[in-house]
Figure 1 (cartoon, rainbow, N blue to C red):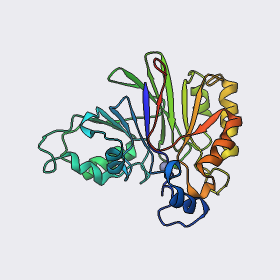
Figure 2 (cartoon, protein in one colour):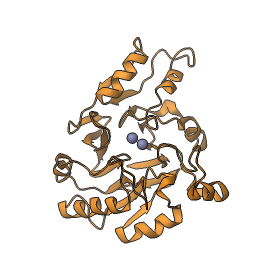
Figure 3 (cartoon, helix red, strand yellow):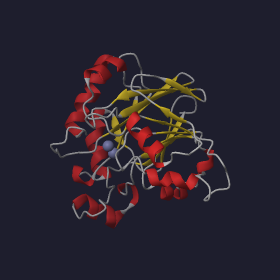
Figure 4 (cartoon, protein in one colour):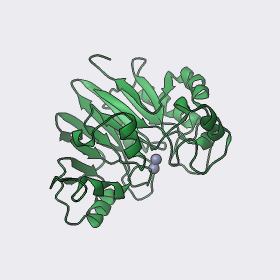
Length: 272
Ligand SMILES: [Zn+2]
Ligand SMILES: [Zn+2]
């Protein structure tokens, strides 16, 4: 499998959309890996995860064609992952196609909002539920439950194909016990996990800072879900985390992890 990180920023990206903090100023001055758009990813060129408001620019930047997508899998309903208005451009009158041959998988909250916005839309819309695996085009996909929005079944996603397993978790919080319990049954070749709050800490429990991430990584080692062979890449970084890309490289190395960046392509398994 190959996963392309289209965006690796938190809700308002880096530089923060309306922010003038140290990390945003650094990113404006130096650019490069410190520019982080809102989180989305693409597996093997055709399984799209989330539809953030930056998707149009990400697609142009990386020379992608959205008509290659066979599935669009949503993790949760926050605006930085679910720009429902963008879906309209896959329809007449913006294209000549009568249908969009791309299955949409979404939790009840997101599926409900799509159905409400596009009631007549001829699309495959399937409700996904945590711990209920589904198959798509030869991939086994298992949503696991994040600790992110009270009352919503927010997903992190495990993808398995050809003996390889990767977990994509942009908005995790410290997982509930049932999620750690489920993770016992997996060995991850690749773990992509948020470190939204970096060196800082807010009152919001739905995200991880470096201390939280350290705790989660230790627990996953104990469970046997990861080991030294597992590649660990971080994402969903906010400017309020007060960490530049280079600072993250240094801080994450002792954990056996590395910071992701926009446009990063990671291969798992054959050819990795
Ligand atoms: Zn987010
Ligand atoms: Zn979120």
